[in-house]
Image 1: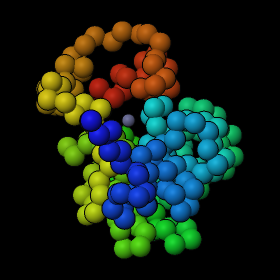
Image 2: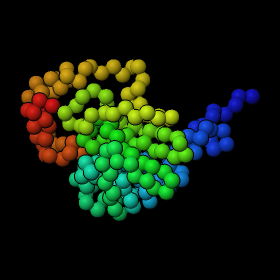
Image 3: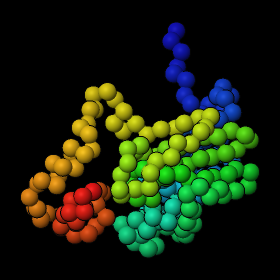
Image 4: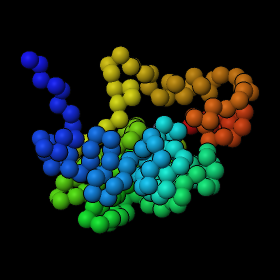
Length: 200
Ligand SMILES: [Zn+2]
């Protein structure tokens, strides 16, 4: 008989790292979720994109830039309270330590290092290792367990080099159109043109 697939987060079978973080990105000991999809009492938000940052949480911990993006996108009262945490500054909560490191994805995007009982778990969120003038540069964080995003991780996704894509976007003639709130910071119909003009 075929055995059911083993799932990460099974407290009885998994290594100690699974006691730190379960498969719902729930930090068990401090009852805090990373990028939760549902409104939660406590949330750590990796970055301001709408598939990671949502409104309705009670307490949000994030970088100052991510908090600013969330408040621009959803309004200043989109969470009960915000606690800004600068990159590289450890924050002790009970016997768990949280530190945010740059993920290089968008402005303010962070990887979350969770330290507990000598174990180091990193949740990357979306990240990018290539240099990008719009984001703080990615930092490699040593850890025991890496929980990585893999939206375009399959080999079928082969994107051109970013410089080539940027060049193609910059060459396009300006075309006023409503901006996509999921992708843009809401600067209006021509919000993408300044980006191209600045050579980004
Ligand atoms: Zn993203």
